[in-house]
Image (cartoon, rainbow, N blue to C red; front, side):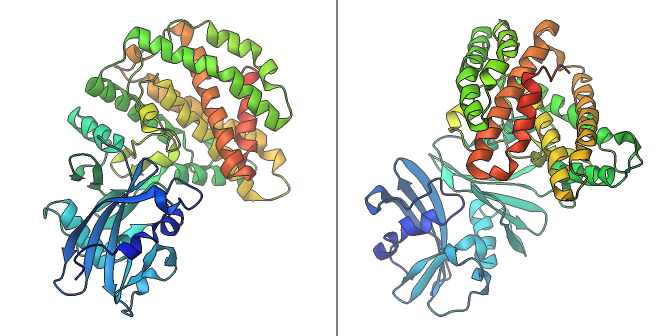
Amino acid sequence: MLDRFPEELTKALPKYLVAQRWYAGSEPPPSSAVQVSSSRRLWSDGADHEMWQLLVGVAGECYQLVLGVRPAGETADFLHGHESSVLGSTDGVFVYDAAWDSELAKILLEVASGGREKAGRSRPMSAEQSNTSIVYDDRLILKLFRHLRPGRNPDVEVTSALVGAGFAHVATPLVDWHDDTYDLAFGQQFLSGGADGWALALTSLRNLYSSPSVETPGEAGGDFAAEAERLGRVTAEMHVALHRAFGAASKDDAASGWRRLVEGLPSRLARAGGHLDRDLLAASGPLLERLAAVTDPGPAIRVHGDYHLGQVMRTDLGWYVLDFEGEPTKPVEERIVPASVFKDVTGMLRSLHYASRRALVERAVADWADMVSTARMWEAHNRQAFLEGYRRHDEVAPLLPDAQASAAVMSGYELDKCLYELEYELSHRPEWVAIPVDALEWLVEGGADD
């Protein structure tokens, strides 16, 4: 057994960290900037297999590593294809990310739950960027937080508050692992057999695009509108529960938050226009005037903050909402600031637009351009269904701006989201840039008067 975590392996941390999806930097940090603030053995078999937790500080940020220790030369087939998860070797042992080790992952569940939860099988999910999730027996999913921040993690805080407020459309919390400073992991019911909204929307679009004789989206197989309407109702129910759990910001704070959003738009539009070789700022003049004229944008409450089709899942029991951490590129302090419910509403509307265009790109055939009008029809059809479902909720009206300001506030949040998307795609997925560009041009020309 190790008496302490090997000092020589801490020297390998800069190279190891930069190879992990959940690390925020793009270059290895200098060794002088990396410090192990805490190391503790979580488990040992009393011989030569162990699991350790390290809290590693990097330039004021804290990362959690949960590492397995095995004898050097011992077979570890589970690491095949995950070589970047190996930290290194020393003193006859090698050290690696324990999430990939099914046996250690099961032990981690017991540690995190204080022995209340056990499992016979485990499998890590590999699509995440900021955390690591492990599924146990297809009944529980444990999210291991990697980038730690003092205080409550928004996902833990909001999910628990929603359950307390009687909102039934989140997976049941089962594990809450934390210390005096950080939330370390959070476990919930695993929604086995469900399909996320993005996958369902793309299925609907593929059916529509492959049915050239169909004149309206409602006539095609797999029409998504009924699900969009149900999702709108669930979204309204979520906002009512969030208001019940967290209250609302003062009227002055809501108004100042809206002013900050509007006042930040011109510089962002000018920057976006520079990328597109078009004067978007000039074209947006009438829209910006409408937004600036709004003095009462309605209540500001705690919202989901990163709401889109990939954050909702449809099961036999209905829609469930996932992941309340907010936009991952923003500081946590910004993610929890109260905002209009239209921040979430327009996030979902933008996701409908993304799905309609992404399904077109998938076709990769000569009629791509001819199908744009069909894509617009599908988007408008489901946009209307979602909004009708949302507004039909009996208790959501007090959370909306008055009728005169409502369309402008929705347009402002949709424009804010489009500009965020453009910046993201330019940095990460340039082949997707045409999607937010299309929406920006539509908005500045007077769209979004739903």
